[in-house]
Length: 354
Image (cartoon, rainbow, N blue to C red; front, side, top):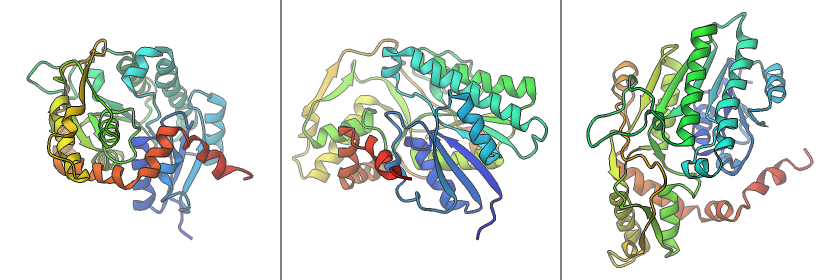
């Protein structure tokens, strides 16, 4: 029987990035007990973790991070040594439609977690860590040149990025005021397997496959820096173990693409995979009215993470994108469950009668 050396709460562990972090930690560190705490709202899907759900060092707990009583109960039960905090409302379009939901989860939820950590760790903070996983969107937008560094002033433009900026400030405030051991990382756009289909890349893959229109905002000239999600999970692993307390680290792929160029690349990959005439899928591209406050360009400078902690991305974008397309084409059941909403019954079926 493996002795447990550390118990870690991963919030949002059933989500896209969270499930990759949980999988990596469960498999790589058998002496760590990984507790996946997730509210299983629309983007949380336990089917993402079918391959580790029976591992002895993995536990799932349904929790809402805004419920202070539930959070305290779990701290009492598990005596967490660390929190890796990924639970968040994360879709910009949804934040425009319902900003208060983002304030509640991203700001209040983070504050509830911080407050609970402060309460339980105040006497013995050594060896404890609150790791807050955030976004590059807190920095606002760039012109055609330059990069976001850790010293770039915050300038959020959407309710989503404003809520993440507020949560980042709370994390640092708890470090500065109470000495809470914290670290933050701010990451660029992620892509890869198990990505909820409302996001750009999985939406396009699914629509190309089903010959549906490919909606592109404005003229498609917005630039994003794309990072393969498994590389992000590796970065989180490195920062968790080696990051300096009270510091923030930018995580990016050094990999900028205009949205329209990315969609064209996806179309050409899909034409090959589906045996279509080259150029066939690109005919599905449809330009739609731009979203309000749409940031023109994001680009991350991840030099600090690279030089201090030795992390760099493992895959070129074209390779990662092809792997991603292959995964979606091979996992039609997962896509069907998610697009139909069936995945939401997985929890009930799995835990019924337990």
